[in-house]
Length: 66
Image (cartoon, rainbow, N blue to C red):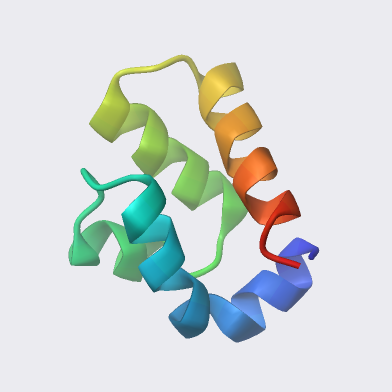
């Protein structure tokens, strides 16, 4: 699934994302609203990890959503 598809299906993916990253709030997910950069930034902030690690986690998550 690419990020253009994610934007259209964001409401359906929010639940899966929150299961994967339980520290993300509803507000975090609302602000990200399907934007990869914003979503990566929220994961990075909440988990205190490097941007590259957050990108890797988000990309792995998206590979399994297709």
